Length: 239
Length: 235
Image (cartoon, rainbow over all chains, first blue to last red):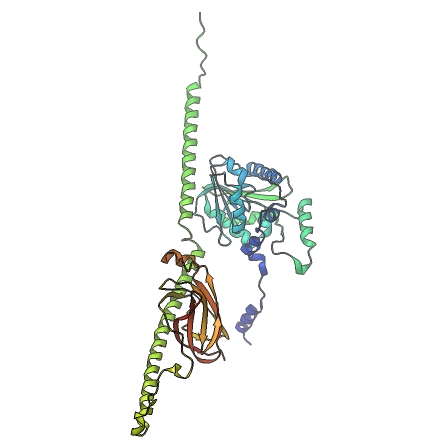
C-alpha cells in the first residue's frame, strides 16, 4: 500500500469537528428570544445590569485603547449591543457585527433610538462585509472564549485589514491564572465529555493573544490584566 | 498713572494654537464622517465583495444550467412522444392493411392509435399559467419524487386541488402555498392568492404516462401538462 493511499484513507477516516465551528447555527439557536440571548452573551437578563457591565467594558476600552468622540468603531460579535448602546453615545458612529441575525434583531430593538449605529450580519468568520482602512477602533469582547484559535486569529487579521492606518484594536478573553479565569475553566470542566456544548468557553494565554497581534502586523502591542481578572491585548495598525 | 492692561506675552500664540486645534478637530471629524459614509456605501453595495456572494452567483449559474438541461430534456421527450404517436399510427395502418380486404369495411374496423385508447379517458387539458420548480423532465432515480411549482388557470378560477395521474394512479398534493415573488411579478391573482403547490408521487421503474392536474373551483379536474416519464433506479 502506497503512502498516497494511506494519506487518502486517513483523510476520509477523520471525523468532523462538530458544531464548535458552526457559529451561525450555534448562536442563532441562542438568540431565539431576548432573555435567552441576553443570558448567552452577558450572563444576565436585566437592563440595569447590562448597562452596568457595559459601562465597565467602556471604561476598560478607554483605559486601554482610548476613546474619542470622533471615533468610527466596529465591535466584532456585538450580540444584543450590550456595549454598543452606551458606547454609541461616546463616538461618531458605532458598527456592530455579529454572525447571528437573531442577536442583531434584539440589538436593533435596543438601538432604535441611536441613529449613529449600524448592524451588520456576518456571513461567516471574518469581516469580509467591511472595506479596508475604515475604522478608528475595532474591539471584540467576551467573544474569543467561544471561538477556535484559528477563528480568533482570523478576526485579528481582519481587524488589521479594516482598521485605518493608526487605528487601534482590542481583544480579550479569560486566562487560567486568575481566580475568575479558573472558575470559568472549572465550569466548563464540569461538563461530561459527551455533553459539552459547542459554545463552551475556552481560555487564552497572554502569549497567544500577543502572537496573534504580532503576526497580523500590529504595532504597540500591549497586554492588559483587567480589573475583572480577564486579560486583553491591544495594538495599533502602523501608519 | 494707569497700569497697562495685563497681556500674556503668549496670548496671541495661545489663541492661534487653540484655533488651529479646533480646525484640526474639525478636519478629523469630517474625515471620520467620510469614512463612516464610505463604510455605509460599501455595505449598501451588498455582498458583491464577499465569498457568500460568489457562492450565490455559482448557485444561480447552477440553477440556470439545470433549467437549461430540463428544457433540453423536455424537447427530447416531446420529440420521442411525437415519433411514438407516428409509430402507433403507422402500426395501426399496417394492422389494417394486413386484414382481408373485405374486413376493412366492417363497423369498428378502424384502430385508434392513441396510447390511452385501452384505458380510461384522460382529463381534458386547459390553458394554465404555470411553472415547475422541480422539473418533471428527468430520469427518475429515487422511489418518490416531489413536484413543486405554481399554477393558475387563464380563466381566473380558483385552484382547489392538485394531483398527479401516473398511469391512472392518483397522487393528491397540497395547494395554496405562498409564492410572493410570483404574485409580485404577475400581479395578484384574486382567486389564487397563494398559487404554489407540491405533490409527492411514487416513481416505480419503467416508463409512465404523467399528467399534472388541477381541480378548478371545487368541481372539474383539468390537466395542466402531461408527458412521459422514465424511472430507472440506481442499480
